[in-house]
Length: 609
Image 1 (cartoon, rainbow, N blue to C red):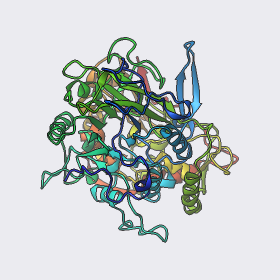
Image 2: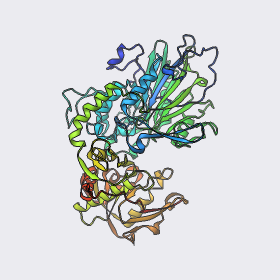
Image 3: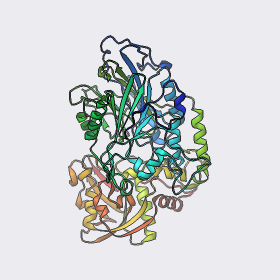
Image 4: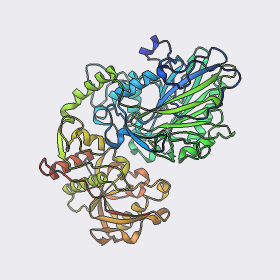
């Protein structure tokens, strides 16, 4: 049954706080600000000189603070490389790069932002766990749930990565209990999340009922705000088939509109949608003015269409998934401005939004909505409770994570259409596959499976250029296996064309290829024609459509994931070991302290723009 109580049943610390409950992933942004309607007073400003406009109005209008973030992916420690930086636009038009992220700093920033705001909610937009670094992933993300509890998170929508280990594991993260296979990691039983996960559009295939609560209502005195949580409808295409077995993912817009009506029937008129789907901003700078060209012109992608069709009864959209930062105003179907926000990823930003609640109508005064993204900078004191939590789990992980498995001569990055790290992983899978079948011809790696770069600078005490198991785990955390299949040349060509056609036409997913496979990608063309068939070569020889080729992929691609349906149709399947083991073996065999591995040149795909 949908929860409408003011607090989660198992909430512990919060019951003693002056300002309790709260739910909903919220908006980020800095816009849509006109004068307050009617005769509302300005109220007091936020604490610590934040100036976010959160006031204590005791009359008709009440400011409600919404703090939100999304796509944390278990990054409790500060993420490294480009994953741990944001770009800030300066007043003179130049840009500045800022190191950002880390749960110790996120906790401090959120706690400072809450000061002076009695009506405050903290929410998240999904993918809190999954594809996590070793400190969290090794323990099935229990550390991240514990950290989120300490952060006083009130509610989150479910992201696609929450299904990486299946619905039963998601239920365990919510409700607690030791892992069914690995058991308990400490002398205490895992308690689960203090906050509710919302997933209105994910249904049990048999019962046709939501897997988790579809919505939640935050209440304080006479103020109440409803939150509807949905994940992206296309989740089955981007997670393993086993992870979503027995589940149905419904349309986001239809689901939100359905539950918005239900909330209003129950007297809840202030509504925020938490949507694990996102867009693509016009600028890489987290603080760019999305509305400068005109309402909504600064963002494209799936969320733009969703925003234009979600019921006007919904007052704000908090989004995620694309790991981008934006605060945009997109008109609702009635033509009224509505905030759409995202706070990038990995805990590098948080969003502070002011929603002005009208006690007379029970609704949000839309013209008074203000929102902005803020950097989780590392120039503030670390939160001691987060430091203790991280130290506890690092102590347990250290014997595994600190082990050196290879050496590199420079950063091996995951960025680019063809990335040096993508090539390295494909080469590692090819080398491993040939230990299972010497006749293996090539390997293909999905770009979304490469989660972080390998950086030359030491992340701990291991020394520069040393690759630890923990660092490799962060790169490939999914525990996929390396699978071998036989394809015809015609199927191989078709698989390469699926990178830029079908479900991947609008947002291509370029496979990372092993050494020896070359071709031209002509981005001036459209659809499947962008892969130039006559250019495809294996060790210099044209692909023969009627010949057979032995291909290594990970189990995700072997199941047809990411829209590569042809890769799910191979013959003579052979399932190998963990893909991380393949990377570890390759690094160990091909590098040493005296002869480190150089970054691959990433020159296997010729790109025409």
